[in-house]
Image 1: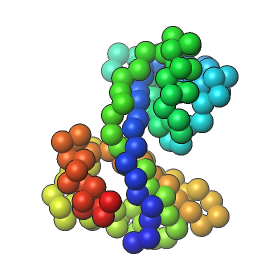
Image 2: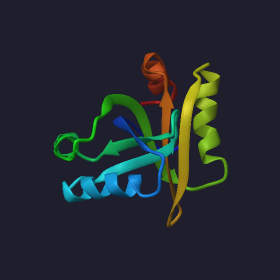
Image 3: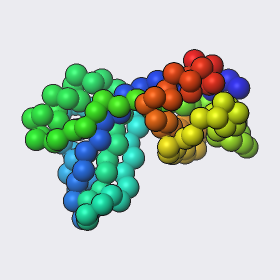
Length: 137
């Protein structure tokens, strides 16, 4: 497997589960000069959505969130993966973790175009070291 796998820190916040909330949050980050390398949002409890973000630069991200009044949780660990798109690319990653008896909490993967794919993968914090070893990093 020639995929690039690295540890990263992600942060999350909760926003109202209403039209435009993710746009408002991302607009504030854009105004603060923040580049995100990963973003995921999904419904959460109580008419809220959880928004997970992996910033390209933590300092700028934290500054922009503070200025925008965004309450963050984190940093928390995750893995970022990118590689050549091919059948079973994510299955290969998940097999490494399965063989090591490591449970995957969540994963999101997408085709990035030009024959590339990317993914973000979460395991429990106490499993990070074993997962990194299983993934060869």
